[in-house]
Length: 240
Ligand SMILES: [Cu+2]
Image 1 (cartoon, rainbow, N blue to C red):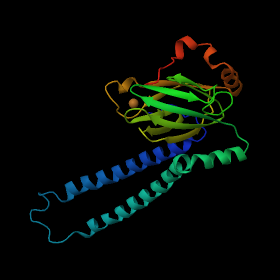
Image 2 (cartoon, rainbow, N blue to C red):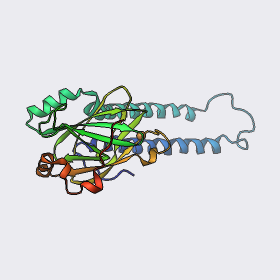
Image 3 (cartoon, protein in one colour):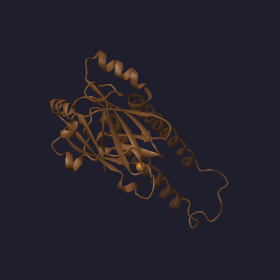
Image 4 (cartoon, rainbow, N blue to C red):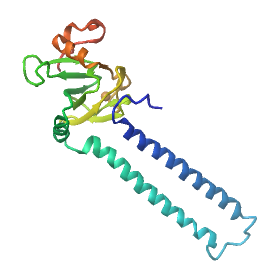
């Protein structure tokens, strides 16, 4: 079971999951009903000799195929929408839309390594490559009700950046940058995990996602390393 959805658009993913599960149950029940019916109706005791023709009732089973095709198309359309909404549209296009709507956004770069996550922040000026950039180890802090654009990278093998509570997952691929975008509405602490078997300690490749109110985030950006719980949560990591 997935934890409660804390994101503004996670319902799109949940919808795909629910439709898939619902569809699988319906198709499964029908398939098993047909199978059991056939086992009884065409058993050896009832049909001592092989039938020369397909019985008319059995021919109607083909109808079920059409139902399944319609279900598949429906699922494809609905899931493609969620996929399109989150992943296919170019990030800069989404960013433009968000700026036009007057919504806030921040950018974070995520780097996966065996077996930890590093989160790079552009600092107060919002621009990467400047003196106020900083990074956190295994801790991601994002403001509530704010669009977060994430660029994901891997420095060694395949990893997968997964935030179950946000219904967000994307592979971290060595040599390639991938992108995610989400908006979280519920403040609190959540789990970030690696969803790609990446080595012996894969199970331990976890990070904390902390969603804080907007003003708290702003204050934190002023002095990121003086954050109250620095000792416990912020582990500065050496670049390999
Ligand atoms: Cu991993």
